[in-house]
Length: 150
Image (tube, rainbow, N blue to C red):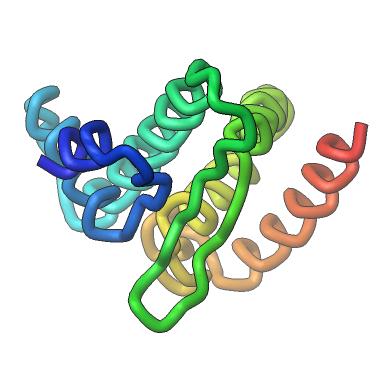
């Protein structure tokens, strides 16, 4: 429903949390993915949300109405994160390269950035310490910053 609502709205460039979660759930339900536990479910949800946002960015990039922006709102109080489809696609490509170098760093970024999880939640999902997650996050951010400058 959220997808069709956004698709049919002429000026709908905003994805809110509910729309993103609904889309992720529908995709997971279609794939009939059996989750082992809560942590596995949350991990899969973050990956599915990343894929949805990348697909959404590709769709927006194809629209020939220059200046399209993707607004992501994480809750009613937070201000939206405004990004272009190109930035989302560049981040996706950089994450793919990071995954080939260090899969754990890539997962930490996916869970934090796309899933919105806190370091404590990521540590529980991945079965590592909070310090490991924080260290991975710092290293991944530095690496991505360097990659995205180029």
